[in-house]
Amino acid sequence: LLAVSSIGVLGILLAGWSSNNKFTLIGALRSGAQMVSYELSMGLCVVTMVVMAGTMSVGGIVEAQNHLWFIFSGHIPAIIAFVIFMIAGTAETNRGPFDLPEAESELTAGYHTEYSGIHFGFFYLAEYLNLFIVSGVAALLFFGGWMPLHIPGLDAFNHVMDYIPSFVWFIGKAIALSFIIIWFKWTFPRLRIDQLLTLEWKYLLPINLFNLVLMVIVVTFGLYL
Image (cartoon, rainbow, N blue to C red; front, side, top):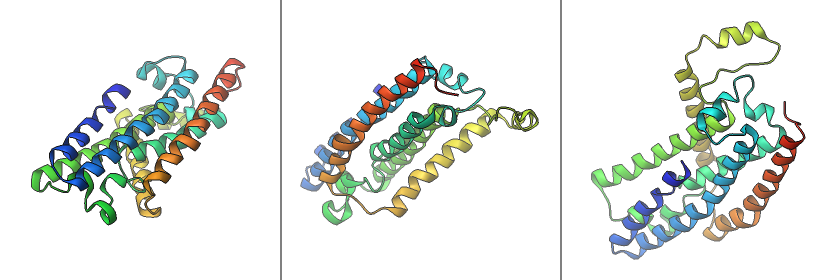
């Protein structure tokens, strides 16, 4: 999953370089630096939840959330991992406030300055597909994927939740998380490129490494619900 998601940066680098325009090249280089940086945080968030689930199988991770979603049962480490995953996912998809590769105020339109028509459409289609995929992965790791909401002790409520089809649960969670990522763009102003990389290397990465150790301690001593 992570290996395939990292291929996307090649398309952006090639699009920026092949346009023979200094703005597109700068946008492509920014995008490469941004995506390579934030993939580390996304990977560590995934590893944190793998530690909790005890398996690297996506199906196994979802099955482990049959009784209670990880966002509720994983205590503080799961919540920290979710917040960082959403921030890193927003940066991975080049969405605001991390849309430095296409900063209109500096680079006209970044790596797709020279593209119009269907080619420009493909860039936007890819961006929103990425957005939905990141939201879907977040739903699988933290919100039980296609598992219904179960609250221990409320058997009647759980029985009603079981009637809702699994694909409705998954698509609904992914759309809700997509809305949160889109909400980021409406709310926060664009960062500078140095602030963007400082956020990852000086803050998110150390917090992620500490959070991974915290999750190992939680699992080792059986502190989760």
